[in-house]
Length: 504
Image (cartoon, rainbow, N blue to C red; front, top):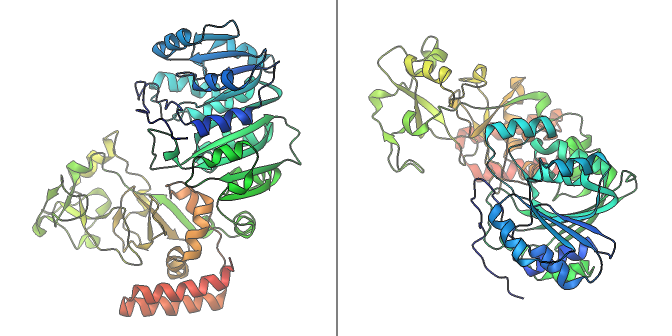
């Protein structure tokens, strides 16, 4: 069946940020996983245009009842016109703050089934964020995880929930509390991973989507969770709805207890058992032997950053400056951390983007004493981790590419698009530079965090295996590289070494 292509954003994006589900394979799969029975009391907490309800009504006959809620008054009016049945109740409500739902939570749940597509990326004003923070704790800027928490509390014991949401909650450090709640209070029956472009009108750059099916039950010690992936054929969801797992591109079962006991309770998707064991059980992690920190932000890069070459990638709207404004000998300037005191205005700064082992200087940041004072005072600027500015270390781009790239900072300032990695013992500098550029490291990193983010919190979790003979071999390889700058030859050698060491 061909998906009905729609605009995708039928509400004011910043306020509601809901993408309405118009894919029949997705709807069929989700309603099938919900398993509606005659006695069910069903909640659709963000009903939108009612496609889940339509699918339930069309395919499931019986005496169930449905509560359809939505925050948007236009959507509510549409739902009332569409569903005129005594078995379907429609009302305008903020699911996250509704007092009636709070009474249900306080009475150990009310609904036997919950299905939905909660809003993600919705703008919350700061006053509402403060309210949500008091109620839910943790990270409240992203709304879909709050819906997961609230709806688990709204379920009766053994009640079922089926949600389609971004897959970021499975690994991101910010969502650890959501993972812990799910893993402690429910049996996760199935997690289906799908590309975001399966969802008409949506194509995220930062993550894909997942459909999670769970049962509210704390007796989950022996539960095994099915992890499935469909990569390119959305119609295969019809077969999955029938229980035909042979169409899945990836299929495995993982003991829920092992997920619960993994580092940060992360799901560690995309890796084999050996990689997961390595991440969870290796005693030495990158964070033990190096400080991993986020860099500087000017608050307004177009005002304070500049280039020498107007052809520099991403520099179209930036100022182009001459050499006479740049202090190339910046490390010899007294109290550089406080700003330049001579007639020079700019110093080199490293921004994100690929670069292996060595990265050329393409960007410069205004660093006069007056400007540095501004960075300290401006609310948007971030003069963070300044004790690491102008120190020797390693840089890794915050945004992922196919392979992790790392390069020497060479004591240059680095901005917040780069994670600075500073070995606590200088003897580890070449070793870590080589490891971070290896295929083994990229494979492990993709399992630690499968999203587009390479932040310091994830790099810290990289398992480090070091043997004296291997360290000596790496030092020889890196010495050869700095002499001849043969990147491909060097990558081949370090991959041979780390493949043998990690045996993945």
